[in-house]
Image 1 (cartoon, one colour):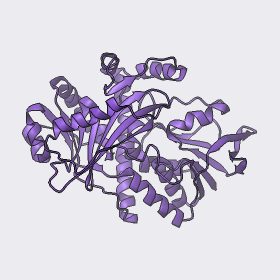
Image 2 (cartoon, rainbow, N blue to C red; image 1 turned 90 degrees about the horizontal axis):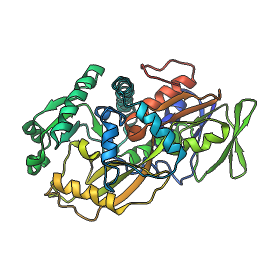
Image 3 (cartoon, rainbow, N blue to C red; image 1 turned 135 degrees about the horizontal axis):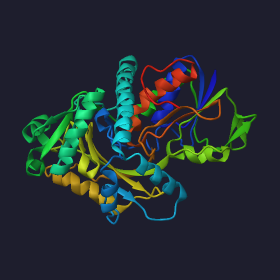
Length: 411
């Protein structure tokens, strides 16, 4: 079939790869001049099955309230009239029950495990180089209540197949010696040896090149005006007055997917969660981690990308605002200084922010929409890089009329 993928981030490009591999004729549209230039550009860099606990959990409402007036809060809801955010927030609260949290975590772990296997197979097939490391992910805790809650979450994750094990402070520092000078702050950690890290931007651009070599056609600088509907189906995509047609259409525009589909009467529970990152150049004598870290209390991750350290995370619900907030940028560096006082950067940090497409449950939307020839691959939140290969492979199976190889709540 002819398949048109809208969006050339990591999710759109992996979708194109697996669709082309399945034998379809694939075209990709993106408004940027190249692949991976929006949410995939400077994210946390983790392939983190171990980060599967949803934001919506029994502890979340009180935490969100306590952070409401903090400009540097890990999770910040901007108080303003926004009907989409209000609807999303009400759905979020419904997902905070113990039963729903458990079910959502199972869905996320199943997809993330499958996706990690797909990534490893793709890497073996293509020899992509993207500063990837296979040294696991270490979740560190500096608050005893947070650590106690994490021990419970780790038990659930092991039940679902993610080998996230609890470790002592001594074990934590043995796994990542760069944390030695922060020993006094630490109360414990979790370690998932099978998790990975790598530069999602480099991966996306290299995979896009491999896609093009397979015959995938990319149209960059192509801002979609609207989808054309006729007789209950999509009959084309209008770009600058030019109509692009296919048999099947895939919406993989991240946070912007709901805006494109709303005129068709499709209301997606996806809202932009703005995340921040700092990319720090490292000197030869920099005391920086080589194991990817997650600081759960501050909702931050630290990933080594060659001679750079990527510090990323937090979530700000402020509509489609993409302005850098200096307070939140400063908070990234302050926390890095607390955990790695001997970091010694080789230059100034480069700050960035991007909009991550979040569903209230953190479970992405993958599969056929209410319009028969329109498919969705969006809503991955902070785990787009982690879930990209699995999402793309599963969607290619669905479009090809096959059952995906995993248990997941597909559309």
